[in-house]
Length: 52
Image (cartoon, rainbow, N blue to C red; front, side, top):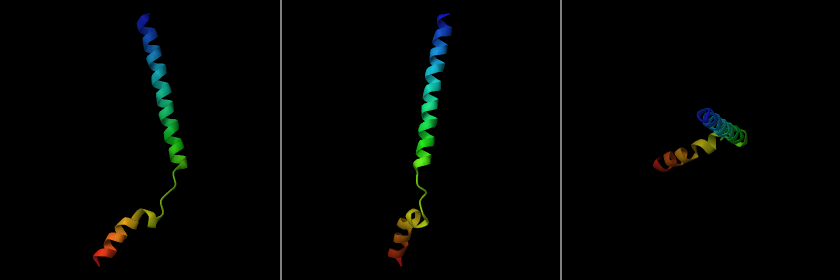
């Protein structure tokens, strides 16, 4: 009986943690702004411009 209670508590804590992790990941993905081409490749373009 003690093992059943421990297993149920462990499962509850794991499910709450999993739900929190998924919710935080989805919120971060929703708030993230897609980088434009110039924002993504500006450092590389600056390096190639200096070498020419």
